[in-house]
Image (cartoon, rainbow, N blue to C red):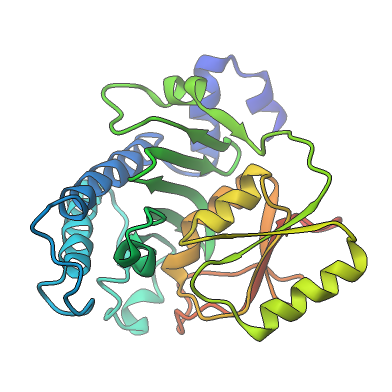
Length: 296
């Protein structure tokens, strides 16, 4: 943050940060409201005793499809009065010819963690990111079953808020005051690797074995959806290697949260972070870890 922002009183600090990023702070509140409202929609279907989870997951009448569409509609409605287009899994049919001129956009996954939703283990999320010039500057991730909200913005920091189902009329400053800033400083004497609960690969197993040669005391934990990136941002895990397919909407919000917490999402084997709104929306393999020395 620049000196001018540092000298600002707390009442003006947020405006200074948002002006610097060319954004209105109402947009992060809109993203938070959209994530919370989408989470409520998802839970209404997830907890409906009439929802049949035995239906083929891609079928139009499956609880997964119904929840995905309902969450998508809520998010699009609440973000509609912002000046930015939306790229989401539900709207992935937009051509690159149309998208390539988008310098700023929302990237949304209305229901991340489809396997977790179907397994009914609660580890699914709503992901909303704001991307500027291919870089995720702002991210919101909501865990509807756990009532946990992660939100972050470049220059503002990354935060975790628990026991939240709605924002009410709370301002951004009030939300920050109630939240815990990430990463949470906590000592752990093990090197903690978080991996996908549903997408283990031989490459991940090789990564773990190579890590054992450097870190004698390793703990391997599993989680679903974008929670894995949040666990690194939070400081619960040291690294998250991903050697399996993901799409931009799977990672954009978590990437913004990781960046604001002093972490980074690097392309595997490279010092280059993931970028967004590419022609090919498929991500390369990646590693989430603390920002490397010398990397801006």
